[in-house]
Length: 96
Image (cartoon, rainbow, N blue to C red; front, side):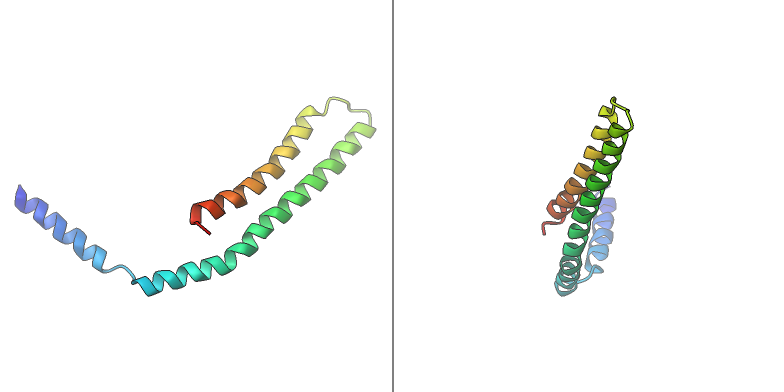
């Protein structure tokens, strides 16, 4: 039984040695960091577009006589909020 664990440990150690080095990981992080801020800004722009579009549609429905628009308001609001929080979550997840 101990030989099986030793063999398993050796196989796992061989896999770990085949991973890229520290320099490659730092380069990948730098590449990701440089392109991430544009993705975060894109999420804020999409949230703004969702907010403006939702406001216009809700205003139009209100003016057309539809006064029970609570579900529309919450739907558009939470869509925009989701986009803002998604960008912040990605930023926190990757530590940028």
